[in-house]
Image (cartoon, rainbow, N blue to C red; front, side, top):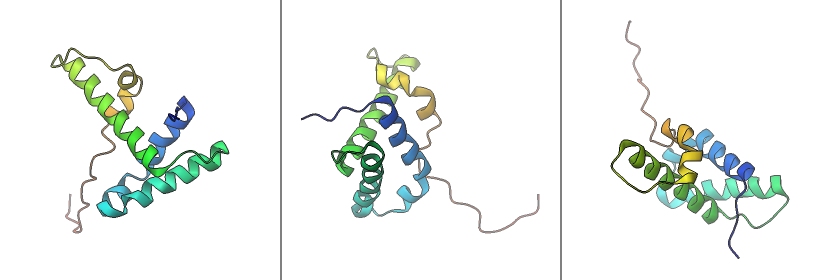
Length: 111
C-alpha cells in the first residue's frame, strides 16, 4: 500500500522539519531516525492513524526537496522538466530553511 499524503499532512511535515531545523542538523546521522520517528508519531496522533513511519516522513521530505530543486532549475532555465509539487511549495522551500544554520557568534563585538 502506497502512503498518500494530503495537503494538511504535507504542511505539518514541512512545518515540523522547519521548526526542528537546528535540532535536525545537530543530530548525528545515525540518530536522525529518532527525529523522523518523533514527527511520524505526532502525525499519527494528529490523524488518529498508525501508518506514518519515520522512514515515510524522511522519504516524503526528500521527495519535496527534490521537487523544489527541479522547479528551481526549471525557473532558472537550466532544466526543461517541471514539478507541480515543487511549484506548490516553491516559495516556502526557496527560503532554504533546511540548510545548516550558521553558527552564532560567541563573542559580542561592539557595533
